[in-house]
Image 1 (cartoon, rainbow, N blue to C red):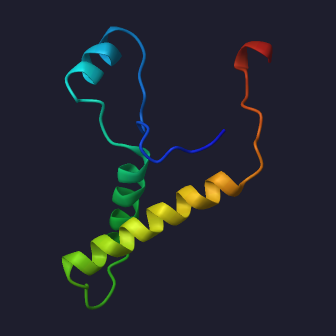
Image 2 (cartoon, one colour):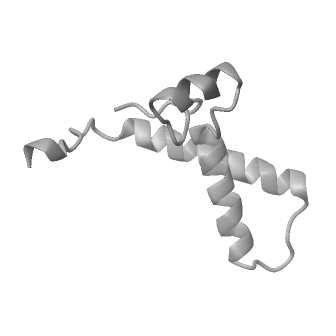
Length: 85
């Protein structure tokens, strides 16, 4: 399955999903979620001499883009169907 960077990181079904899409409240995209994870990890590591915000943001976006790129290079793996277990 291909990782689409602008798809919702936490898609939902049902009545709320329709409401959210109509009102622009679909939540974080996968790219935004990966950026947040990269920033969280970098800050939590407590590195010495924190870079300025624009440098840190650019780093996080680069990490997110690389994660998406690598995920899309992986062989297509069959998803688990729990109903057949």
